[in-house]
Image 1 (cartoon, rainbow, N blue to C red):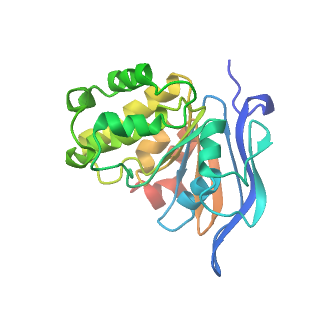
Image 2: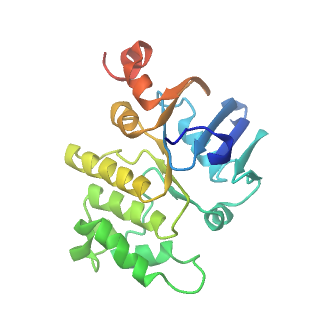
Length: 243
């Protein structure tokens, strides 16, 4: 049986990190981890610090105190492109595609940092994972539906073959059917060997697929447990699940 949380399985560890935007403390003394092979969900109200924590992992905000370890090495002072080289990819909130470029060109941009080749074989693998994009490979990203754009954003992040995928609000603005599809793809991505750190407003679906979860409240984590236990928590039900 796999035992989650054994030290040798730890992939990412954020230790007592604090981030401020000017005089405003966004997160304070926050600690969380992702073990190898896990899906970890971060839930909580808007403005609680979830996305800031994710951005801190990817080097998009300055950390005032604390440390972030990836494969037991500090990465807190690295640039986002250096994080990609280490094996971390980000699917940003709002997708951030190149709208005037085609599906293929967006995927090629994702492969830009790859050494040796432009990842043509891996682009085909991405199109197999997201068959809705196959027939639209020559279409510009800006004319795709929001669901198709989110698939493309996921594919662009995966082209680097990351050890850890960071996903910031991947269901935001999607129709219910596409929400289901995106979560199914996250499960498939995880089963293929990629760990996932997920920030998500859809708390129920996030916890349903997560091995573990963290609940944020005003810049701090006030609950952490397995996804299953958090789903059954009365406090979580009242605050986030309409229970």
